Image (cartoon, rainbow, N blue to C red; front, side, top):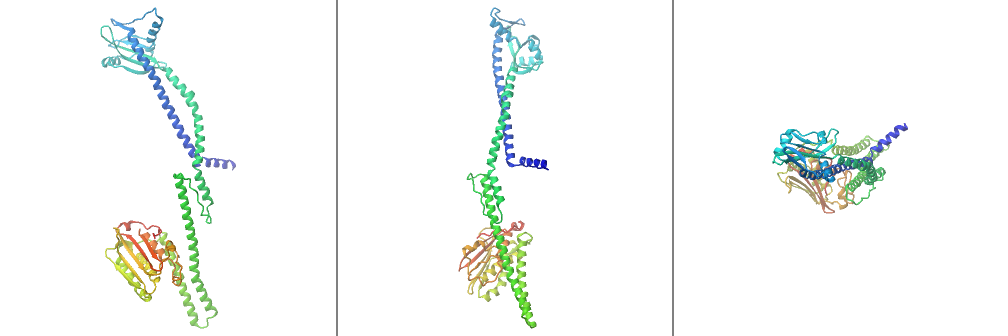
Length: 497
């Protein structure tokens, strides 16, 4: 078991981000150093071969001064009494070959024979083109030689093939010894230093990530106010920190909304349940006649109906926000829908002494769900009529918007208005503005939540302008055409205020 735990710990270490970053640094620099070494080796080899080629050019010119061809036979003109000159000529004759135009070898050194004399075809090609070639060839033992071949003229002007060479084995040995004894010997040390620096740099680079992880582990439902300070570098890590802080802020708001929602639901459900219990207790302990029982049961059923309305509204809103409520979109003229809904609210408005008017322009056709549009208008008009005192007015305007491709629906009233501090929350579930004017008005606080979801599901926008004591204006904009029908229903977003 201990061995398995040790293996698992090592595997976890190998999977860590710091180890993988360090390994990436080491691999990158190893490949880079090897590539630089190979490039340096190639450059050094070319440089040394260039020196050998320049030396070979000088010796070629010197050989032409000492070599004379008389009657088809090579003659080396040298002062035998001069040891230095004799040594130079012997050095020039170490690797060389002379042939006539037919490819017949007139003279060649033993070393050149081990390399291999040139074929008559190559000899004739060089003489015919009057070209000079420098190439590397190897003898029987694999020793490399740089050979310079070209044409020279005899005393009678005849062309002869002449080639001479020098060994470049020392060049290759020098390059190989340098790379093996110096460069590649230091390479492991350089890789070790790179790995050490990479480990330190990786640890410094992921320090903010570890801070994010440590902070995330400390976050609980009661500690959502934790924030990670920015580094001030305005880099990807600062972007990550900002995103994490925004996420915790959203989580904090979500938890606050959930707690508030639970409180509101408990309050809204407790009221009808308390009323039902009170009615039944009164009937049980005080009722004596059938009429009294009947009245208590009727009152209890009315409270049960209110409780059922709350549950149905919550269920419908939950289905809508979770995407279970499918929209049946079709091309619909909104001014006809608005006319029907306005007619339904005329009697309630007249009973309260509120003047309800409608300005309906044709051409306001959009791809919408009729049922949801009727619910949207009903909720807006219901609130407008409820919160407008006697003698006030409520107006509905429907028509094409100033922005091309959009339709506009406006519900305006001269009611009590909404305080500015309450405006950001009016679309929250169960949220109701608490004031002296609204205290006696009944409601669940779910109507505007439905409105916000319907607008979002139709890819529209809603704007609210309100002045306390003067009234409110809700403006809904919806896109025209098939684009709205092809878009899927989305999770409701916060309406703009």
